[in-house]
Length: 222
Length: 222
Image 1: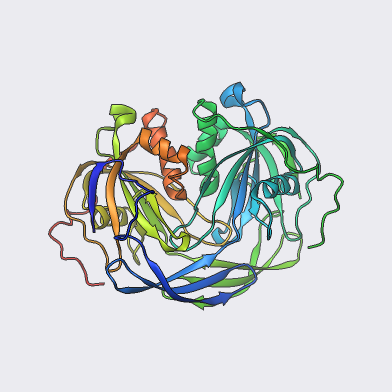
Image 2: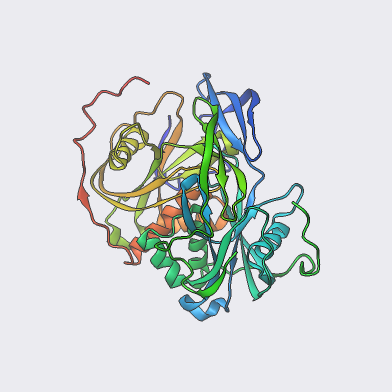
């Protein structure tokens, strides 16, 4: 192990042979309806071998839907959801999000998921960044997108999907974080981006919506 | 689906029969060395049935190790790591974290992981909150703990564990987030708590370290 106490320890551009693991061979050990689990044997930096088990995931997109002009400050509201999450056995306060379909660009997924889950359509979109929610055992990436100039419409939930749609201000989300009510990791990460926006530390590159309105398209059968 | 556009949509205290899923039966469908996957059949709110596949996880703890007094502002440094994460095939910038051992209290896990991974020991600790990193397919909970009054010492990594230890200021972490270098979900969530601390929005309930210094204890065999 290299100890590195000087400032700026993170150097993604550097080669890291003392850290990097190389795949030797692997297999899919569980192929479920939702989850696909791989088990790979890897070469460790010291020449040894180890086993790595992890979930393969298609990726997802989260949407911060701004209901007011972001310049209105901490009182501006965003679109939120309440959804029962069976793995954690509770109703979670979350921002809208969903899995990317095969060959679907992340931005198109953001537009689709916001419309399907909440009914809102946005005139402008900006990509904030991405998170890896679960680096220990999943390859999932969640892109964080912001949407503004929203128009309300009817939601079109997938079969077996049940959720409440509502709104919350930045101050309310902060209070929910402080009280332990907001614990969804991706939504907490998005809240940090929302703070950056409100503090003027992030200047979104707003773009017009990438696809025609979904309002007239039939909902594909599940 | 209930549509709920009034402010304050989140009401965790309310019963939510229109959202809640009930387990009917379940089984462990994959039992690996690291991952354990369950598949349950659930009763949906509308009376239908659905399948839920998810990872069972023992829980984890993340540590924000403050190297200076938090009142020194955004220049104060925290302990960071660079670690190759095989599922995402890259070296990640992260805050120290690790899985909870069987019957281990989260605070003891925080003390142990900080010492093992970074060598640091802290005189005072405070719990910030928790996140659910992956509500769609994992029951994992990550508690976020803050540590201060640190003393450096030798790290004692587990076999097959390789990482660099370093430090970063709040400003450097913000820059890493903005540039896309900081994408680890749990670390981004912890960064929001660090901002809350620096802005005076969170007043930690600092407590003396819960266990004797680990320096004299032998490292248990793996």
